[in-house]
Image (cartoon, rainbow, N blue to C red; front, side, top):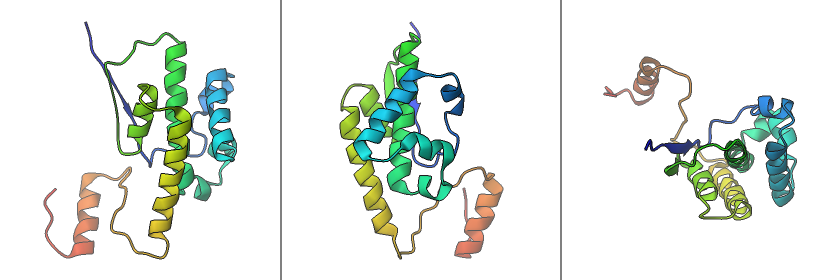
Length: 158
């Protein structure tokens, strides 16, 4: 017997146009999941991920519900296609909520409320405050080392 796990992504994997290939195929499960989420948070999430604006999608309160909804909708699509049930589910940071929903540990509606509030609180915590955490996406290790070295003026070992 082959075991496999599903790993759900965290914040930072969002982009304008995500899941477009699913929508062009008129996938009702994806559409219904986004409609359900939009109803709970009172914003048209589908329009936001398809059209933007990017600056709004990248705000934590919207990013987090968009990633959660995308993950849950893909998992629901997987199930509709008779995909094999994973032996394990896990997530990176925000992705933990997707794993909890998809494993049946919490309701999707509850997770939406939690991550929307989580995102709002994260946004509020950083308003007019310098932060020391950055997401590193699409840059090779050498560039990261050089940026850290320039910033800290100390020798770094990665």
